Image (tube, rainbow, N blue to C red; front, top):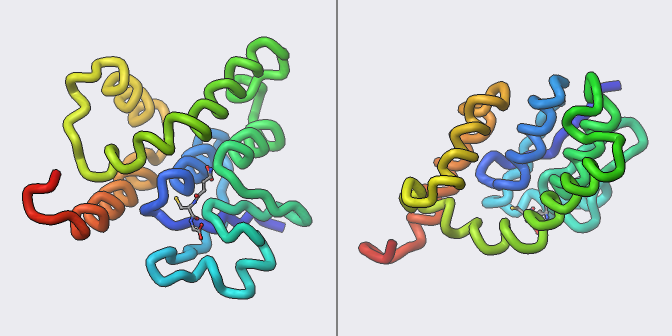
Length: 164
Ligand SMILES: N[C@@H](CCC(=O)N[C@@H](CS)C(=O)NCC(=O)O)C(=O)O
């Protein structure tokens, strides 16, 4: 049985889960849940994820959500080796810290900023990290940039002229 990823390209966490699958090197069956149409509130999806968020991954009898949990699961279950999610407790602790930092601190603060196309070049470390991601993750342009641009367009459409 295949793995299903319930996904909405404009969602950053959802793109993160798709990029995790690509980094691990597995194919997932992508099912689009259009948040702009409130499809996440449909009864069928609530049965899969009562918290009605994307991304949500279904692998056999496992239904798991939150992009960070999905990334850790895919790397553990399907990684060719443990390089993406090391078994060594100290190396893993560093990765868990980064995942928790993203979940609790970074993403809640930057999601609005990233979407609207602010110039990140003055932030050399951030710009270098984005550049490394785009080179290192297979399918980055298709799996990330298209959705990021769509989200940016949707956010900008809600802003008053010159508000950016
Ligand atoms: N921490 C979660 C955030 C998931 C999340 O908030 N997803 C949003 C889209 S970015 C969502 O599905 N919202 C729909 C809803 O809450 O009904 C993750 O990393 O997956």
